[in-house]
Length: 448
Image (cartoon, rainbow, N blue to C red; front, side):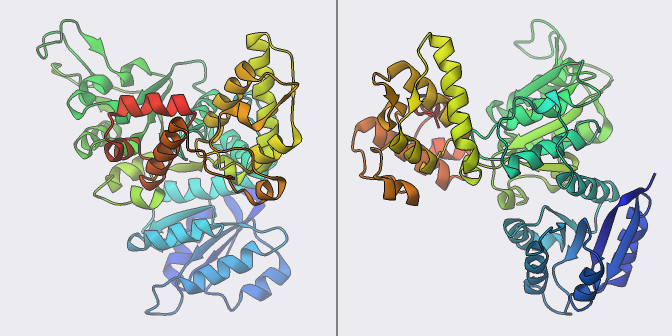
């Protein structure tokens, strides 16, 4: 059934490409228009502003730098009620598409596209413009900033579908909470939600963990064991840290998803699977499209819908409500009297970089609840590096004088390694000369 309320505009100088997209989208959306470049855009916008724009990034023959498309993107984003923009790009132009995302595009599609992927991307873009429905599925996702409202709207729209979802975001932003919210909003909510940390599985055990094994299949297989795909039957399988999965193991997962069946180790026949796949990674999006890091064919199986969870520094209006929520929570848990946050401390907390995002904020609130001795919470109670900056420095986001204590230096070194590794735990651990397990313990210790 066509959506008579939504309007879509395709801007592409290739008439065949524009026509193909128009014919596909008209099956679901009544108004789908096309123009061949930036020149007719002004006249079109004078008549109406579309809900979604599919935007090619190059129009002049021989141009591959994307400047023309990025300029059009800037014009669209400057409108009072800007449309959602989906960038259209050749596979080799993925870095250019990532630049478009940084400038405000909601998604990108590579040419030639998969029809289901394109249709899903448009549906998701429309969901970003819809009001957020009240749904218990997203109750655990706290925050009323624009970015969080859009994320909740996407979950409400995508959740009831069977589309595979890839959740992107830094450490500590709440990617598993998003995955659970998708499960609760789905038709599978009465069944199992099964989470697997793919980055923590050695390549030699991936097949057994995911697909199961029969008794005697290998030396330690003393009993038959169901894999995670079988355990999640009828429900949602959450593959966390998918970006850290070894390349060899990726091939086995791809085969299972393509065939919709798995063969336990030692079994002589495959078993059908019935799961919805939600995956997550903190790997940088541009790096994720590097074939040496992640198989493109598997990526396209996983990212029918992409949800990007914003870091806390990009939704600072949520910091104070989150602080108050977790302080009240831990005050009740530890039997403490409620305290207010001192004004200078609140300004410093608001300006903090929060490298570890919501997870770090939560740990800091627990520490403050336990250790605070004054009538109000002070910055030092939260165990963050440095002392509370002066009000002017807090407003700029400066950290004040460096804290030379050993634990603070350790925290800063770990944070720097995580930043250099783009949030990849395995790479950061190697830089620091630590095992993954040791690094995880230190992340918990320092609230990162």
